[in-house]
Image (cartoon, rainbow, N blue to C red; front, side, top):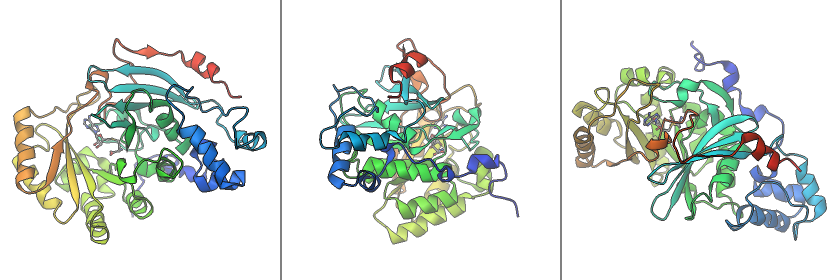
Length: 380
Ligand code: SAH
């Protein structure tokens, strides 16, 4: 039988959980911290200092020499597991609509994250891999290939460093940056736990969304172990069409992915799933596609996010015109399927979905010298 991982370098799928090094203190759960510091109040004091400091305070992950209520001895214990270099913001690029793409240096890897302003509730889009383990034909990140899985502490550092780029609080986090979260499930689950735990950033689980290209075993585990939201990037309405766009569909066919959501929906009918659907002109945007999509999602508590294709040079596809888009959306609405069009934010700076491929653009960029930032934050 063909291996389900056959098309990938096996080391790409080696679970990062096998990595024995414990996480840096900011990626520990409350229980782990309480255990390490031998006191829950001490752990909560540390979390308050870490996640609830005002925007005007220095936003560094470096531990202070002294911290009231925690004590020097306990801080020294936490210093034993710090990354080789501090996570650093290297560059930020802002577009006219306010979206801000950030380039970060995480233990030598350059990855991107995006801060997306929305009325009253900002969203952060974070990366879980350098490059991507999957090869979707329309995605710019896929063209980079896979470099490595990020650790939970590196995902959380993206949140930590970007959250105050805009004044309004960040209420949503989407794992829709670079990478396939379900291929790095252990670390993604850890990051989600920390984002939603008491004493931490305290985001509501439903406001954290993990998006997948459809890696069945990871989806099963995610639905069992997390209450965060799941988004499935469907992007097609027949198996043949999907296999061309997303080669892994040959291993985990769309029918099996949707059967999982349908089955899970019976057990937790109130838990809604998001279905991502990138519209590609002349490929998956016909009336017939809209009809099939409605049919495919029957019995699944789902909301559809229609995403007009964001053009980039690594892919030949085009976005459909506004009229086609509108009638596709109307067809779904008329059939009673909840759907909305996700107009791209951050296109000017190539920060929209599927455009994250490490290019510095835009005149408004603020480049912070990689070395100088790293040395400013040199490990203490
Ligand atoms: N690997 C995960 C998360 C990263 S991609 C996944 O596939 O879901 C995040 C979203 O962007 C997915 O819904 C994906 O289908 C979409 N996407 C990728 N490339 C795109 C492009 N060029 N234009 C619009 N959406 C794109």
